[in-house]
Amino acid sequence: MNCKSSLPTTILSVSLLILGAGCAHVVPTSVKPTAMSAGDKLPLNAALVLNKDLADYKYEFHMMGDTWVYRFGEPLQDYARRMAAASFQRVDETSSAEKAFANPSADIVLVPRAVKADESTGLMAKSKVNLTLVIEWTAKDRATQNTVWLKTITADASEVQGSVFSGSKHLAILMQKLFDDLSTKTREAFQNAPELRAIAH
Amino acid sequence: MWLSSCKICAAILSLTLLESGCGTAPKLPDYRPGATAPTARIGRDAAVEISLDPFIERHRTEQFFGIDAVGKGIGIVFVHISNKSLDRTLLVEKKNFELVPVGAAGGQTANGNKIERGTGGAQATAWLGASMASLGGLALIGFASSSISHSTEVQRNFVGKEMPDQTLAPGQAMEGFLYFTPVPKNPGWIRGAAVKVNLTETKTRQPLVMSIPLSQ
Image (cartoon, rainbow over all chains, first blue to last red; front, side):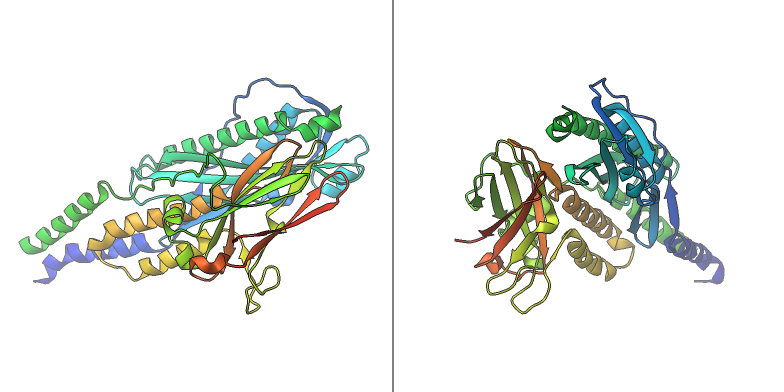
């Protein structure tokens, strides 16, 4: 085998090596607000805590030396604002629990927390990507600081992975599905919480 | 030159063939028992009923978790809790479920090592990852692809099935799985073991403590 004939093999090997080197990919996480059915608003004033932990929350998925970074902070804050606004008569936003407890007009202190996320996927374009995001909501009585309601919401979404050319489109669909599922389940949880209704009446 | 081109073509063709039908990550089935399983152990008091069903059969862990969890030292317990009280809301948190093996303190193995509670998937996928690391070459890409998709789904599935932390209002019920590691790598890990449960009544902050044996 001469030098010329071994060139394609060398190019292929080098390409594979380059492709195999670790890369970080930032997954776009912008989502549209989920359309929700109108429901009762609880006659409570809620102090919503959107702290740094939520704002900075990200999930990293590692596979074969590559890392996919999901920066969930911004969409989670938007989701939390929408859920609280849709469920309570009045919402005051704060950046810490201390500030929320110091708010004399608040009945309850509402704290959303990102617990964890996980993903499963294959290597091929038609592989399904399954994404799970776990969010916990805690409602505390402002006066006693007792936990009056705690709910863990597990949101799931699946979407085809897509090729090099269509992957971004499918990831955007996956994110939208995930936040639609999260919003629907959260809205339902607020609507069906006897613990919160008991405080309101 | 011709021979070399043939080799490249063969490699591309192999990859194409291997891609078809490989790499999907089928979701593992949900566990929805219609009634209390015969293997479940039940703890009761006036306010609450807690059913614990340890998954010690290999076929059940493979069916619902995609791995032989018993063989890997992961203790899986299905929990169902009903609030039977009329006016007490209970706070249920995973951190307040402790595995107590026979002859040991809560949260420790018999030889004093700490038993962790958490996503058992991490340990399972670490094992799968070690198997993957020993693979190489184009001919193994198909196998590697399906193994990766399986291992990532095993871990995600553990996360999705884990028991949630929540408050439980009167008349409500909840369920989910708890994971304990490490436990002895055989079904005997439940023998003489119990789960110590500590729930809190939200209004008075009074604890409700119960110890439920995992075996008869």
